[in-house]
Structure formats: C-alpha cells, structure tokens
Image (cartoon, rainbow over all chains, first blue to last red; front, side, top):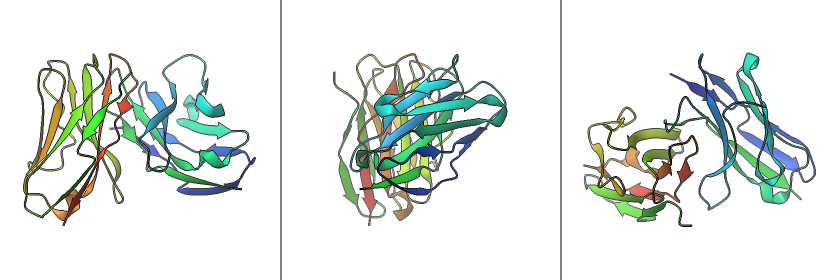
Length: 113
Length: 112
C-alpha cells in the first residue's frame, strides 16, 4: 500500500519569503501526484497535479511542484508567498485512473504580514 | 457549473444514534468517494464507487459504516450506533474518468 509523508507540520513565513513544502511517497509503481489546499473555512481545492511528462508542474496562484522519481518526492514551491496563502496543504497520491487518494498529514502554512 | 454538494453541513447527534450523510456529485461524474478528516487521523479514505462496479469498501473503519449510491448519482453514508470517535468532517469527492477528484464542503459530525 502506498503512503505519503509530509515532514513539515507547521510552517510560519513572512510575506514575500520563498516556500518549499516537502512530500515523499512510498510506492514502487507508477503514481499520480497531487497537492491540495484547504483555505480557512473552505473545502479542499486542487493546486496542481502530476500524471506524466515534464516533472516540473505549474499550478494555480504561482505554485509549482517538481516530481523527482529517484527520491520519491513531489515538493511544493512558491518563490514569494502572500498572506492569502495561509492555509493547510495536503500532498496526495493515487495509482490509477479514478482510484482512491492517499493523503499526507498536511502542512499548516501561516504567512505573516 | 455546480460542484459537489453535501448535506447537512453540520450534524450533532447523541452517542448510539444513527446518522445519514448525503452527497450530490458533479453531474456526469462516474466515480464517487467518501473520506473522513479528523484531528487524530488526518484525511482517510472510506469508500469508493465507480460506475456499476462493486464499491471499494476497504477504508470503512467498522461494520457500523455503510454507503450506497443510487442510480449512479447521489450517495448516502450511514453510520449506525454512532460513537464519539466518529466525530469528524466527512468529505465527498467525485471524478469523471480521470485522475482529478473534486471535493465537496463536507459534513461536520459531532457525536456527544
């Protein structure tokens, strides 16, 4: 069974700082990778996804993630965070079309002014 | 267009009572999923329906939990004899025949 690890549980950054959130997964086969975001009081929304092809994927709101197969990693990055990026971020993986997602425990990002 | 909707948004019940949670997926989506989000356990998969195939029930935590999907659309998650550890936010998601799942706002269940 696959598993997902997010090592940063709570990150506090000042506005304009750069962001990198770690995500590692455990699965030997082909995976699809996702980052979801949950803003305060809102439901889960997809930030970006990787299925195949270019390992550097760009999502909404200036976020990007890089899939490094040799490291089983899919880290999320943003060059300059904004106060509105304050949210909880979840990395997730599944292994085929229309299959269940396995989530990491989430990283709570707090951006201060 | 309309997203995934769930009802009720909040449910408070007494221990031992049964509850039903409803999910309306995005029209045309063939796959429907239930997840649970709780402080101690994070986001956990519960059950998954895909078209007319038998559902994947591998995530249901006990036989008190069941779900059905009628007519390939609306789904109901039922929890019998609720326990305090069932308190959580229950999330529904749907997808077309693709990899991306769209989530609803969830039902917050509180068992007193």
